[in-house]
Image (tube, rainbow, N blue to C red; front, side):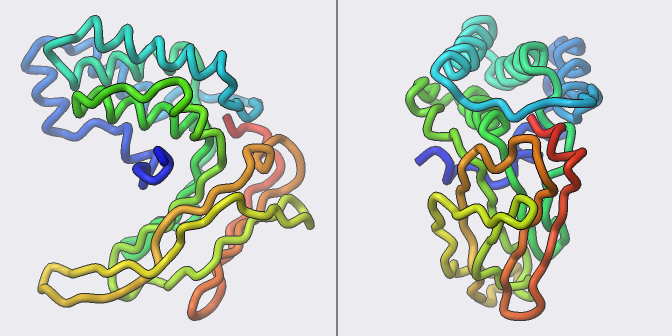
Length: 234
C-alpha cells in the first residue's frame, strides 16, 4: 500500500539545501521562493474542514502532478516544486496545525491527513522520476495515518496507538506496528516497534478535543489537540 512509504509528512515535502542550491543555480528562483512559502506553511487558515479524498479530488491532484511533470520534463526537482506550488494554490495551507505527536531526537510519531499524504506521495514520485500513482492508488490514502519511527536505541517502545474524540475511542482500521531491527552508527543492533496505524478520516472532522495515547514499555505518552485546532485540520 502507498501509505507505507510515507514516514514523515512534514519532512517529505521540504526540499533539501542541496536541491534548493541546484535550483537557484539553474535559474528557477521564483519556483524556490514560492515553494518555500507553500511548504513551510506561511499561509494561515482560521477555520477549515478535513478534505476527504473523493474520486474528484484525487483526479484534480493527479492532474496537477501530470501538468507539473509535463512543464518540467528535464528537471524532476523543478517539477516537484512546481506541483507543490499548484497544490497549495488549489488547496491552500494543508498543514495549519502541527500534528507531530512526538518529535524528539529519539522518537518521531506524526499524524497525517489524506490530503497531506496524497501531496507527499506525488511530490516524491515527481522528484524521484517514478511513475505517478493512479487516482485509484491515491484513494487508498483516504485515511488518517499515525507513523511511529524510532530514531535512537533509547526511544520509548510504542506498542499501541489509541485515538479518542472527546470520550469516544476511535478504533483503528489497520496497524502494522511491529518490532524492527535497527543498527546505530557504531554497528550495535537494537529492536523497537515501528510502523503505521490507520484510522478512518472521520476521526479528524471538526468536533471535540482530539487525544492520542501511546502505550509504551514505560509511562504512556499523551497528546491532546483542542477542539479549536481540530476544526482547522485540512
